[in-house]
Length: 149
Image: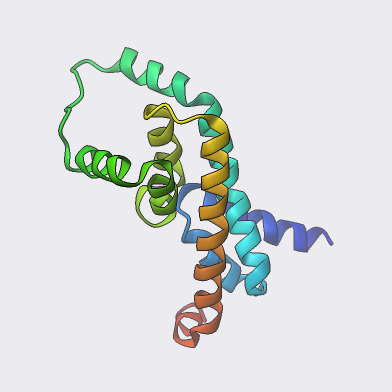
């Protein structure tokens, strides 16, 4: 029982920083694809929860520590604003796992002043959808599994 819990925890922790780490860890630890998807989504949602509540503090701390003002028009900023204008929180949430990472997506949503309930709802939908899809692919594509052996 303890070893199963540690496997689940490993997959969740791998998904907290980079979402694709969870499904890869699930394949390596020989979990089935549904377990991997749920743990990956849980790991991402832990990061979303944490950063949504401390996002304003992180912004204030970063602003206080900067010696020079940040660049206003970087490539990433332009991309984020373009996605925000076209799709809103749904677009930001959908692109968080593959593009923005679980670290940057919630901070971006907080910066756009999205209500917390909306952030949690759409990030959870995105995490579950991406988790199911990526975990299924990682477990069913055999040549990926051969890389890890």
